[in-house]
Amino acid sequence: MKARKKAIKARNRRVRAKRAGRHARSRAGNIAIFVLLLAFAAFFMLPFVFTLMQAFKPAEELFRYPPRLIPRNPTIDNFIVLGQLTNSLWVPLSRYITNSVMVSVTGTLLHVIVASMGAFVLAKYKFPGSKTFFTIIVYSLLFTGSVTAMPSFIVMNKLNLINTPLAIIIPAIGGSFGLFLMKQFMEQIHPSIIESATIDGAGTFKIFTRIVMPSVKPAWLTLIIFTFQGLWNNSGGTYIYDEAWKMLPTVLSQITASGIARSGAAAAASVIMIIPPLLVFILTQSNVIETMAYSGIKE
Image 1 (cartoon, rainbow, N blue to C red):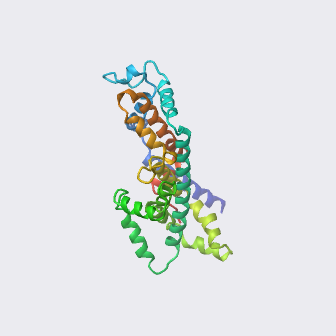
Image 2: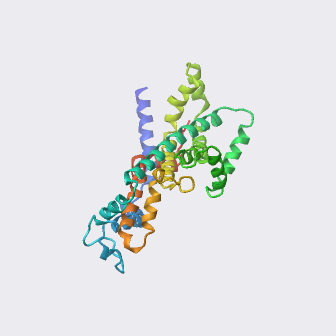
Image 3: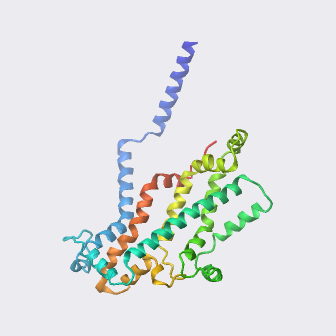
């Protein structure tokens, strides 16, 4: 019996070694692929690095031709000028930042919760009209925000939400992309898992929070990135006219539109706008890559 087990283990080792040899690459091949990937990474990182370097260039280097990527005399004067410009406004810069953070965090959190709960019902429960409802959601992905801007404005006006942050948060909660994404991932969860939990006495809410949501973690982390980025870059100019409730992109766009004299402050403003979405992406990037690969959940 022991000799047979040893023979099976030896055979398995030979099979694994054979498979590994079949897929092995030479060292030169690995180096070539690494260099190619490094070149692509540098190409795609170039716009971000250039924007970052522009923020630290003095005025005489900003308009130099041909432009240099790395500043010779780096300075933080552009950020100081940006602070002085925003301090001259009657609403402090901190108020704009607070508005943007509050709307982005609240809208993202509510959208993920609502989209996940709706997707769970559509993916795991059958009810009359469920397929029709999902078909409408899929078709709604075809329409951009510009197409629905006027109906959304009329609805917000009827609800007396103009000039309030809710006019930006509520449309974000009902976004169809999040519902579509979460449903596609939740469908990969085998029904036997939910049936077993039900037999063990778990309720619907417990199944949703303890089994389903942890299983689709890459999906909702990806949804957080897309939703947060969309809300952070939303100026809210369509719905908000009160200066005290305006968002950070509004005041920064006013600065960047002031001409060449404020190019340095505009570069510093661009860096400020980039940092929060970049931090969110860095914190969740491994799960986002997993989502893009559509690994899903295997039975």
